[in-house]
Amino acid sequence: MASMDIDFDDIESREVDLATSASHPETARLLSELDRKKLARKIALPTNDGEVRARLRELGEPITLFAIFDNLSSFTNLGSQIGDTRAISALRFSPDSSMLLTGSWTGQAKLWSVPACKEIRVLKGHKERIGGVAWHPEATLSQSATAVNFATSGADNVIKLWDLENDNSLRTLTGHDNRVCRIAFHPSGRYLGSASYDETWRLWDVETGGELLLQEGHSKEVYAIAFQQDGALVASGGLDAIARVWDLRSGRTVSVLSGHSRDILSVDFSPNGYQVATGSNDDTIRIWDLRMHQAICTIPGHKSAISDLKFFQAPPKAGAYPLTDLPRAFKDLPIFSDGWSSDPDASGDVEAKPNGTNEGEHGEKPDFPVAGSFLVSCGFDGYIKVWSADDWQLVRSMSNDQAGKVMSVDVSSDARFIAGGQYDKSFRLYARSDVDLS
Image (cartoon, rainbow, N blue to C red; front, side):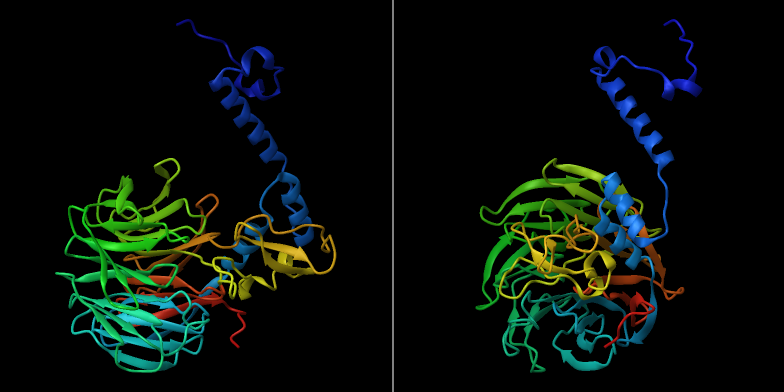
């Protein structure tokens, strides 16, 4: 092929006959990329918050994310608490963010106050190490304190259901033939899913304790499980390096998420319903789009196994599941505080509306759903990391000061705290240094 003399220095300023050339896909792609780079070089970076938001609006960039990520980027270690005499293997915040539930390799579960981290109760129900803990979606909100509020699973092959008032479990779910790992409540609260080393995941009736579904499909142990927010789909992750998405109505696999090279140790659905995050022993996080049946991003997230990950879930709106309220941590951000009140739109996303007017002080509103706006992960490298959910870039990285592996991670529904369960028997709370601790 004959060589072409092209002056790359002035290619951006050349006149192009779009009628004849832009129709070619490769030409159109190159032109689009050049336009993007030219625009990027012209972007001014104001420091005044109002000017920043105005400039972002002009560029069509999401203002909500700018405010949220700026808030998250200042998270720091508030302190640690010895949680047990062996590793803290699993932890989760209560739906109202007032308590933290931890499970350890001693077989004990504990309830802690947040943010004081004072021990509330010790629950001795398992004979072996705890593999998973989960809160009922209405626990600490509308659920009676004497009803099932949370669950624990263990290497003794059983699952325990607990209320908030007694030290003995309400019910024991038996049926698995091997260690039970992660567990998750169905969004309705009526069912519980469990992943096990017996190479199955199972669905249980919370009220009766009966086994509703025994699902095979993985070639090795099943470690992680998560439900889609509307409850129609469930995702499972196994030590066969495969994640599967299942239709609960038919019990059939609707998508096989293949790409990791080693064990999948964590899985979670984005609140948008069509994205799934998986964390693996191959040190990467993969983001999958169920509409495309493929991974849209591979994040080299940690230097060792990714043990847990969670999308941020905004607090449910009372009596209106699955609609959400504005998290407490975001209410003082300028984008939300300048005369705006939170109301969910028809899709369930939080949409800010002015109080009694058609325009807020800045004539704008949050333009990106708060729920699912970021993802937290932890790894055996001793780090907890926060990732943006729009471009999957790192927002914040927090070390545990060489305390060893981080076994589990969660973010409170009010977005004020992130917690990490440690191999060194402790758990840690992370937040802004100026967080309101009341």
